[in-house]
Length: 67
Image (cartoon, rainbow, N blue to C red; front, side, top):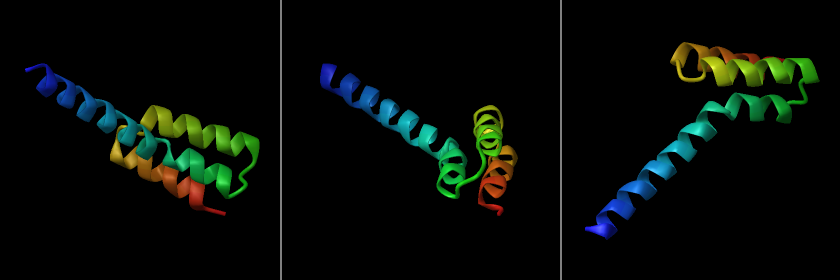
């Protein structure tokens, strides 16, 4: 029974890490495309605050990719 609980816990931890990476992807892209510090900070803040909504995440992603 303990092994089953451990496996479920590991699955949840991996899911949280993957979702965190997906939500913070626009911030990473902004840094890689050499955005200014203020733009990168705004994109990072937008992805943290609005990243849980699909529309907010897509807007942050578009903003990070836009030159």
